[in-house]
Image (tube, rainbow, N blue to C red; front, top):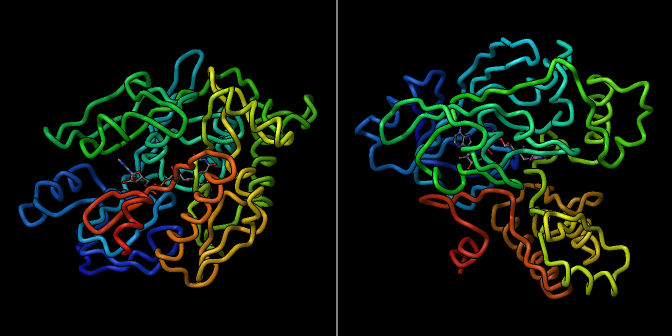
Length: 348
Ligand SMILES: Cc1cc2nc3c(=O)[nH]c(=O)nc-3n(C[C@H](O)[C@H](O)[C@H](O)COP(=O)(O)OP(=O)(O)OC[C@H]3O[C@@H](n4cnc5c(N)ncnc54)[C@H](O)[C@@H]3O)c2cc1C
């Protein structure tokens, strides 16, 4: 294993912001991962497990060790009714989905083109077009950082929620995802009730046609991080009370919201768009001109540009709709994870 000291992070996260860390190393096996964590040299150093960095903003130099997940390997087994995919954590998620569709293994097609590693997918229970990871997840294998043993968690133990799981709470900082198990039914059922997928003719539905449609929509709507740095949806869709939603709806009849248990999930992109933020710049950062929920690295943006723009967006939405947006993107500060408020405080 090679440790790169004072390494650049520009090419290991999709925002592609010029930021650095004390050290960076790639791990290809669980044994290597354990040896990094047990190495006395790095014992007191903050550590960050990173997949493709597609949900990250490094707000300043990270005075720690970045460990890149390169655990590879996919095994396909099954029972009478299901295919079971055991996927090691460093496998690229979009490549996995494409491969599964090519093998005629249906069930992952709605989750096409979500950047990242398979081992990162359970962290925020990735989701798109009516499907979330929890719908196909059978188990998650973790390396416990107190015992250095691998333990299998059932889907229920992962406590999946909207962009949420136990890995953000009880197991935060205590476990590394080393593999996931996905069950795909042998009798495939399309999930085409969501938005534009509804218009696909029933007789043409197959994993491949849904995959193609999802790829086409995503390519037309979302900026490609390889061209314009970004981390996907910057904010989560806020969940508000029905009363609050009704009040807003009487004033803004076109507000977009979906029932979510007893609450209403509001489209954050719509809120930001109403505040006229599409195409607004702050230094080198910009709210994407066609997709208000995405902040892009328009022109050599610094993390400070992104933070200031995010703050302006959040404040405008709060002032106008009395809704406080929470960022979906994970923020990494000098010594560990941070958030928009703390990162802004650190600027002054
Ligand atoms: C253009 C674009 C579109 C996107 N679209 C969607 C979408 O439709 N739906 C959606 O849900 N998300 C979407 N995202 C967000 C992103 O793709 C997901 O969050 C993805 O799962 C992140 O994977 P990653 O490997 O890049 O994680 P990273 O950004 O590398 O890491 C994210 C967090 O997970 C932690 N982590 C990573 N790996 C591990 C591990 N093995 N064990 C423990 N912790 C770990 C990291 O420490 C970090 O806190 C999009 C992002 C982009 C750039």
